[in-house]
Length: 237
Image: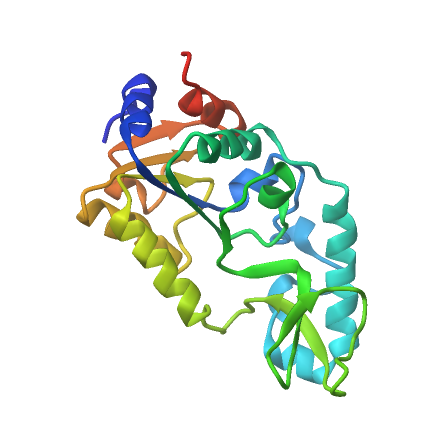
């Protein structure tokens, strides 16, 4: 595992097919809370107590109240330099896929186009009966009479199978695979960098400290994504 940013930049710019996996560390630099730990408490609840199907079945209004609060917090956050660097990288790439574990929509707000939201979106809702998704307009019930729920992956729920297949396909065909701001603890996303490496991609990890994914990386760049991604993406450096 190397730490040479200049060499990582050279190999990234040679790649024709690029895939990026982002996690909470990218959004944290925009002020998005992680909603974990003591600062993650809302009233007397922890995320694990509300972000699950049983909690929604027992008290859907309470779960929606929490998500409305989260929307209010995140609505005031703006994309940071890491988000904008990925917009530039996509603009200069012939084939680019951005896979994100974040549900805040900041990549799209920054201008990224080919974004796949692995864990759903805080700004969309889904019918619990028909499964159809829509923009969240504040309604709690679908026209069919069933409850609408946040279109996010809750604890204990699997990812959408088509999304998983798309993600692994992108990883396998990548020439460069960037891992940015993710803990590397959540499956199946944590398998993607290793799959990319097995298929010959150059894997570049950016994080403030090593993760379980670091052993699969060709390069580990230690530091904030907002500082390092613009340097990695820059073509005139």
